[in-house]
Structures are given as C-alpha cells and as structure tokens.
Length: 204
Ligand SMILES: [Zn+2]
Image (cartoon, rainbow, N blue to C red; front, side, top):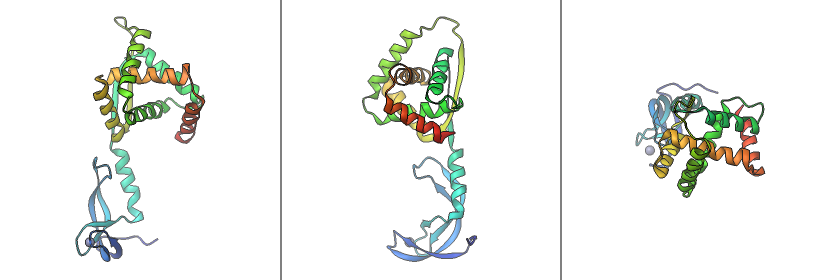
C-alpha cells in the first residue's frame, strides 16, 4: 500500500460535482458521523473543484477510530452497595468468567434498548419504585462508586431516559439495575440471556 502525503493527488467520485474528480490530499478536522466531536488533523482527499472532503484513505482510519474512542464520557454515581452487588451477580450469571468491566456492556445494553422503546419511561419508573421498596435506604447505608466510561451516544441515550423518567443519574441507575435483576436473575428469558452471553463472548 502506498503511503499518501499532503499534496498528493488521486481521483474519487464527488457527490456534489456528480463526477469523478481529481482530489488533493490534505489534513482536515473530520466531524464524526453523529456530529458529536471531530477527529483532528486527518489526511483526507479533497475535491479540486468544490473543495469538499470526498475520500478517507485507509491509512487515516486508525486515527479516526482512536479519536472516536477518546470521545467518551463517564456516567458516575454513588449507589447503595446492594446495587453494585446485584450488577456483579448478574454479570457472573451471564458469564462466570466475565470481568467486572462487563458491567459497562450490560448497563449500556439495557440503557440502549430502553432508549429505543417509547414506553420505557413508565417501565423504568415502575422499576425504580420496586427498587426503593426492595432495597430501602436507611441512613448511613454503605455506598459504592460506579463509574462507566461510555461513548457519547450512550450518554445521549442516558440523558434521554433521565428526561422521560424524570429521574436523576443515581436514581435512573437504580432503576436500570433493578430491571437487570428482574430480567437476568429473577425471570430470565432464554433469548435475552443468549444475547447477553454472545455479547460477553465478544466483549472479552
Ligand atoms: Zn466536488
């Protein structure tokens, strides 16, 4: 594979010009496709006629992937320790060899599914009520920190659910963890468990 440099030329199809055009390689900040952030100084092919970015050479894809991975944020909360125990128990039930880092995948899975479902607001509020009932919080209850670094789109899912449930981060996490307890530990459905086991296998 030939390594390209700034100023090199090639040809590519430009959608704006509707034609195969000559391109010049130069470095530009590339916005991610979801519009959340940019990958800085990426070598791209630019249309010589209209100056739009029209190609991304293979040598640039690792830099884009790295920038995208770096664009994560953390969901953080201090939860009563029982919730972390439940989460770890569910992780262990899905895959006894999974590390506690699989917590992140498990929570992300449930948050993403809920964000896609327009009825999840009521479901999560009900789950929150049951959680508070089941795990009453006496004063001075032991708490443990949960910190999950996730891509910005997962943060978006999370914010969406906070809005639809009117729960803050900590309370929403309790609700999601309780939902996990119900669906994974108490009333496991084979299809869901199968999906989560497959997720665990590719996660490691
Ligand atoms: Zn063009």
